[in-house]
Length: 413
Ligand code: PSV
Ligand code: MN
View (cartoon, rainbow, N blue to C red):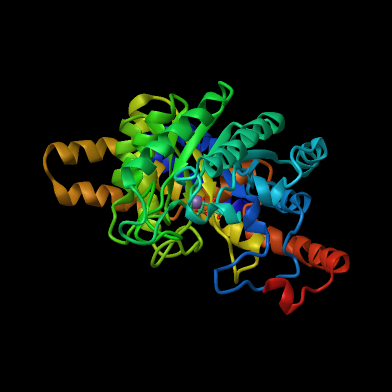
């Protein structure tokens, strides 16, 4: 019953779109081809610097994280890859068994995230550190990550640096910039021709006076200095509150420098809240900029859509399904925008008509459309309900508690 309701409703929407001169087949095919990568760290017990709360179903090993990501992909149909954090997931280097485990779980290894922020030697930075030995160690870890990525068949090296200073005068800002450019160039040189380097920016935290890559402009300049396979990564949480993220996205697309996203939402800064939970209109506006450029260029842009969320309170798989579903629904809303009508409103300086054209897309209920797309992909229309009905969470919670026991307060100290 529910199945036919979803398809009836979606069919009516598609018929209406066809009458308006739109191509329903193209809309459906773009919705099926969207891919969103989920992060291995989003399935583990993670939290804030003030603490973590344990969940019995939380994954510990890379195998468990891949299993959980497999469950998300199985139910949403659009999450075939998993971003990994090199030190957290591969402390002993490449392991063919992990690749095989991923295959069995129905996913593949995605972006490699080196970690040059946790070791004691990085107190004053990694690529930006004054000490050449520390810089060498950081570069070596990134070179090892390139090699690991090659071995695991990953296409992306995703770089985020905690580097910066806490006090005025602490270091020479221009010297640090040069150290960064040199180190990035060296890592870029080691990448195979099919690998893309993503350079992420963040305005503050853990450094508070200045971060070495504080905004998209700095990331763009450094990516250009690194080499032709480097692009900018936009983490939606890494912006000041009033910042117009879709403008940044539009400019990066225009400069052919947009490489990917880390999706999350925030009230204040890098809060890691569920994508679209606070401001879905912003995500819609970002997608609108991307789809407008795709329509103009007549091709899909190569953008790595990735989630970067660590849920401290919500059940992790449910939160991930909610995120991916929200992204899919918002992407559909942006696809529905009548951009021909928008252009003609813009040409007449008809501000109200232009804005209303965007709002018409945003306020269309795309949930039946996503349900329909899923049914066409051979999966349940309602991924969250299907997950809840599957008993997956209770099963892994039991298995993992039997395997690891219940962590003590000390385990989270
Ligand atoms: C840093 O805040 C960040 O956004 C980077 O992408 C890290 O890789 C990720 O969070 C996980 O710590
Ligand atoms: Mn991030």
